[in-house]
Image 1 (tube, rainbow, N blue to C red):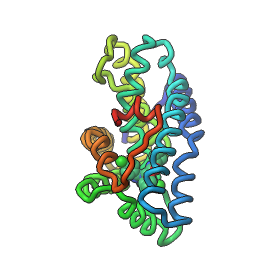
Image 2: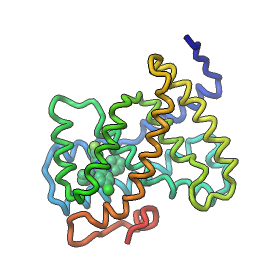
Image 3: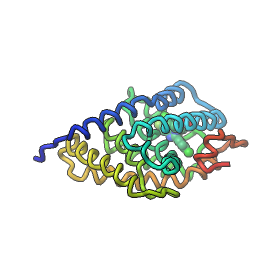
Length: 233
Ligand SMILES: O=C(NC1CCCCC1)[C@H]([C@@H]1CCCCO1)n1c(-c2ccc(Cl)cc2)nc2cc(F)c(Cl)cc21
């Protein structure tokens, strides 16, 4: 049985990333609203664009807490944010859906998301991804580290100094690998499965512009920030 040791740097990294991740309250707000009322497709679209816009703002704050991120080239910081914002949003949505809820709440939430106005062709791939995240039963630290690894993806478009991003990502990958052994000792392949979800996440995120454009509303209005980050309009 492998004895897991964390260096002082790794303990500090874990604490900083988990604290920053916990500051993010948006998923609870959306869940609460969706469970409270049944919205029209227009209201759902507006809710999504509002939540996604504030999610981008929270994501920027979160990345500032990733040790070393602010020392990266300024344009590379923007390229990493732009390249990961949609994935981070879907990851957060998956985690919101898979949160422990009172009996029957998850079913209501799923039903309302199914009926929110999203075009049928995207329901299956989206829920397949949500289910595959749910099956992993990630602890909070693993969720926070997985989001960080998504942000620190070196091969995003327009990243100039990829090795610098790789170095930061490697630290977080090493920490996540240890956390996986610690929290899932019976599943030696757990870490590999977790990283495999990032491939599924990237594929799902390729559809995001189409998912939005095909939302069953007459007028697809986006905020300036979403137009910037989400390649829409
Ligand atoms: O607002 C959402 N997600 C936010 C985004 C910022 C971070 C927190 C979660 C949307 C909702 C869906 C219903 C209509 C209103 O939007 N959403 C999506 C979703 C996201 C992108 C597209 Cl294109 C389609 C659906 N999947 C969700 C799963 C969930 F469990 C919950 Cl609570 C909400 C979810």
